[in-house]
Amino acid sequence: MSPEPSAEPRQSAAAPVLRDSVVGGDNIQITTARDVTIVPRPLRRPSAPRLLAAGILVVLGAIAVSAWPTLTDAAQDLSGTPVLDGTATTRINVGDSLALPGELTADEQSILLREPSDDEFARLMSRHRAARLNSMDVVLVLEGRRNAPIRIIDVRPRVLRSGPPPAGTCLTVPAQGDAGEFEVKADLDEQRPSGGGSRFLPKSIDLAFGERATISFTSRARHRWHEWDIEVVYTQKAGDGVRSMFFRAPDGEPFRLSGPAEKYATVWNDPSYLGVGYRITARNKKCFEPPP
Image (cartoon, rainbow, N blue to C red; front, side):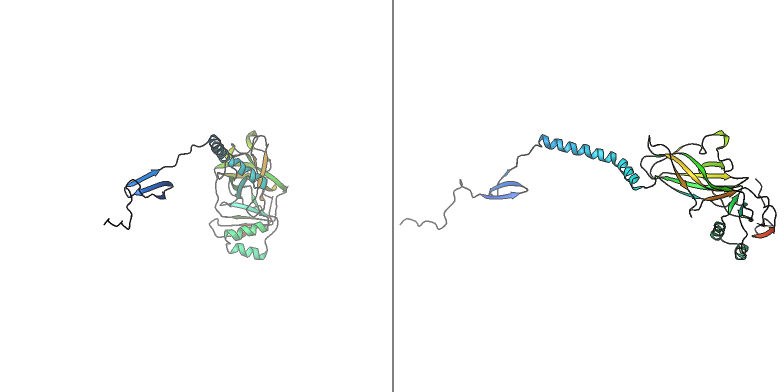
């Protein structure tokens, strides 16, 4: 008898079973565990239009980066943002005297007699529009707010009002002063730079974004009373011409300075000059003037 055929037919070695799979994006044909063939995908070379587009994007990006500061400045100009930030402050120095147009009330006199704080005294003097006598120092701090530098050409006083010296009350008080990097000196009675120059600022100052300059502004008056603020003269761009910004005290009030009157209805001084405090020392007399 012939042998019965096997229930499972044999597979020829020349005809392996193929199984398709994909690994990592490549087509893999697997026949046996030891027979693996990887068929890589063909590499695509970038076409000339793609290379051109990439180059254009790189150039445009470089242009945008270089033009960004100019665009930012232009946007701030259109929005009306000031090209400079600044603060102007003044402190009373030891021995400074102030003149008021009127006399102090009884309540205000009691404030002086109990030695008020600096803030209380400043509010009292502001209420009476007190003027510093003979000279005063104002510290102006400027900060550039544009990427392109702002050139400060001059810093000078602008007289708003003027008249005879007030003769109501004169008083002399203690306090501390301050100083700055650039010094400006002006005589408000004359209103022109000393030494025959054309400007008050010793030299021009260039301020880029975030850069600061501190100016110590000393003004003098010997004959008249003045209300004044500080004018900053600058140029922003070539061909734009000269422009100005104006600065006052932090409370928005102008500065006040006066020469001495012939006599005052009431004179307040420290009679001992040793820190006793505010006292009425004379009436219808000249004010105490500290030595120059």
